[in-house]
Every structure is written in C-alpha cells, then in structure tokens.
Image (cartoon, rainbow, N blue to C red; front, side):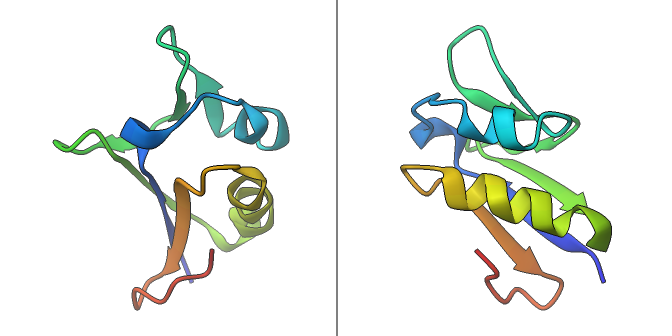
Length: 82
C-alpha cells in the first residue's frame, strides 16, 4: 500500500526537524521553510508526495516531530495516519 504525505508549506516555520529525521526526503529552502524533495507542488503552496510502505515509519517520525503539525500522512483511502 502506498501513502500520501501532504505538507502545508505556507504554515511551515522552518524548524528543520523533518530535514534531520528524514534527510533524504526533506530539505530547507532558501526562504527558510522545508520542502519535500521531489514533491508535487500544488497551486495553494502545499506539497504532496506518494511514498512506499518502506518509507512510512521515517516519514511518520518526521511528521510527529513537527511542532506546528503541517505534515500529514494519509493512506490510499484518505484515512489520516498522522
């Protein structure tokens, strides 16, 4: 089963915890906010990335480390995981 990671980038405060925890998936941009690498960029400034089962735990850790809760993970049915 694949999962979808959604990042509410406009509300990101750029603390960088996601970048440290899931280094290959996240990076800080020049504006100080985090980006999901290789993510789909949505018109509203948000980002979306489909991940595989093997990447779920590290992305959950990244999402749970976010102090402003702007990282969300859903399964293919739309059920919220984080």
